[in-house]
Amino acid sequence: MGWLIGLDWGTSSLRAMLFDGEGGVHETRHRAWGIRQLPDGGFEAALSSICEGWPSCPVLAAGMVGSQQGWHEAPYVDTPVDVHALAARLVTVAAADGRRIHIVPGVRDSAGPDVMRGEETQLIGALDAQPRIAEGTPLVLPGTHSKWVQLHRRRISGFTTMMTGELYGVLRTHSILGTSLPDAPAAARNHESFDDGVRAARASGSAGVLTRLFSARTLVLEGKLDAAAVPDYLSGLLIGEEWRAALAAGWLDRGEAPVLIGDEALCLRYRRAAALFDLPDPAWIADATARGLWRIARVAGLAVDRPSPVPMELPG
Picture (cartoon, rainbow, N blue to C red):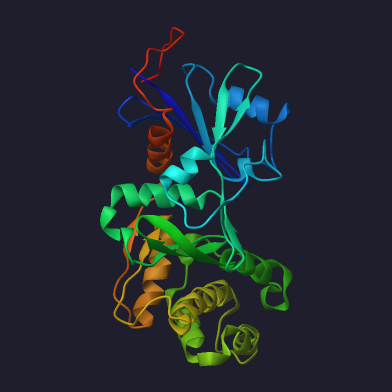
């Protein structure tokens, strides 16, 4: 049986997946070793530790590991981009333990200009899982830096980044809007306040959400918003702004439902906001990174049936 190790290596975490010869994930391991929080020994030590006991086989990595701050830079590929363009531009690094790590390049849209790194692999996985989205369907990848993506003929043809998650964090912890706010656990989320934030974003019209952000403080001062509900209100404002801007920019029509790709809890918030904009319920695809890594590896000729060159004992 042939084996492949896939790495989803971002800024704050590292996920390693051992694929069997048919693309099934045999085992997954997680470490808090993003490119900014590496263990002693750096990238080499992180790779050696997380792959301990796994067979000697090709390694394919996606994410910030290929950035200028990562292990080795994998230059951006300009849009339009498909799986073949990504597979042709892999950057290979030889690790001290003898493994060869192939790094997926990021994607650049010169029209922005804009870039993505890691999301391209999710998109390839989503296309592989649901070929029907290959033409015309807007795709949204919510997150710290949300991506609104356009596809054409199974290629990433363009995209726009919205720094929704990062802006939320800045407002929550470094602005007057977040001053002295209590920490509310996820289970205590205030859906009503979230909905109010979405409605405020929608009502901002062509002026946009910058004209409504300070309402998070004004409503508290007037006793109309509980301080503990401010984080949810801000979340609604910012996610609502994505939908408002997307409609204003013509990225989607009123009767059109985009496809959401990513974390279920976050995608549920985007679906809730879409309903408040009277939009059709968006479809959801779970994290597609694993499927994307396997697809890229197959096209690049890394994931093929081959005997393992070393004896191995696999857990489970």
